[in-house]
Image 1 (tube, rainbow, N blue to C red):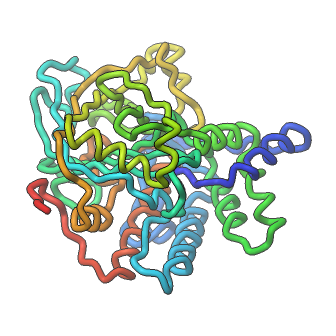
Image 2: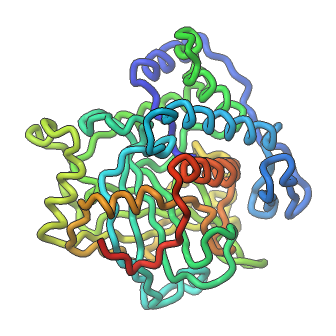
Image 3: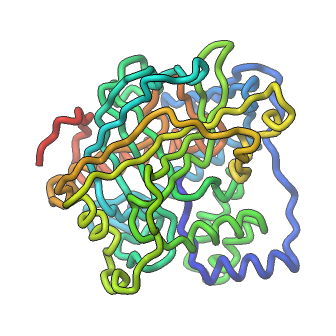
Amino acid sequence: MPPLALPPNLLILAVLLSSLVFVTACSAPQDSAVANTKLSGSQLAPASDIEFDAELGESPWPEEGATTLAITESIQQTIKSRYANDLPALRHVHSKAHGCVLADFQVNKTLQNEHQQGIFQPGASYKAWIRFSNGDSDATREDKEGDGRGMAIKLMGVSGEKLLPDESHTQDFVMINHPVFFINDPQKYLSLIESLSSSNMLARLSAPFALGIEGSIIAAKINGKKIRNPLYTRYWSMVPYQLGAGSNRSAMKYSAKPCNQLDNTPQSDQLQDPNYLRTAMKNHLDTDNACFDFLIQTRDTRTAAGSALSVEMATNEWEESAAPFFKVATITIPKQDFDKPEQHKFCENLSYTPWHSVFEHRPLGGVNRIRKVVYTSTANLRRSMNAVTPAEPAGNEVF
């Protein structure tokens, strides 16, 4: 569930008013005494059973199943209304792509034993389609406006049984350029999107109150970000994932960090171009490669600091003092001409979801559980509206 784009004036209003009058009960997941409990598909969506791994700290939020269905229906209705007479239907958020590029994902030849799980096998190599995007729902929004930025990675040639049946050889990693999400409770998220989609101005003005003080501050930080180039930006998973399987499994978060520290402050001459981030990517990749270190941090529950790191509280950052990052792979984006209409169309028809995954990297936490239903249903809706037949990429596409 990517960040919603909130109008900056509403965020400022929310923070100011919240500090004066906002009082909210801190919702928390319900306790689960079973290592792996399930929420049936009928409560969420057809063929969409969700497991909760209590041993890793997962537990359902109040009314999570019904709320997930309501969130899905609300987003579907927004897409239908927005694009009823203006096809093709785009993603609900992260609608504007800055570029979609073919890359190489090379796992380190040497890894710590505990990191050798799933796709992270020493020396393993994968082709990847990587989509860089904005966070807003408006694909015409100028790049000079503050916004969260996304990096979605789809690895190909990944063997093993997958969590979703629609792609059999892929592994997706979904990130934005901020380490945490702005909401935990699905019911608050539903209240937020329903208020934002209302035609009543008072209802829209009240929308940020669903976030509370903490969420409003995080959302303001995300939506205030201005960058020079998506290739110079660091990205985080925000929410946790499983590392490994069986009794040795643990919880991890991941991040993609540029190999070289480059000035990421927008230049004044760039801001004249409403799509300057695409231009910046194009100018870089016309003459040089780009590179990211792919990092993971794992939670060590044998320590007090590690035990305190939550898998359900998506607003909480895992401090590196308690869970340091380790490099496990290198992403190389070779010089290329990606700015082609057919390549852009191909990438817009791709579906990115963290549930395109091997079991060793199963998404964890409430935000990810909602994503499983929302991402699949909205991808299917867009393809239906656009009359597109889904096709799993192989990494050998030429445009």
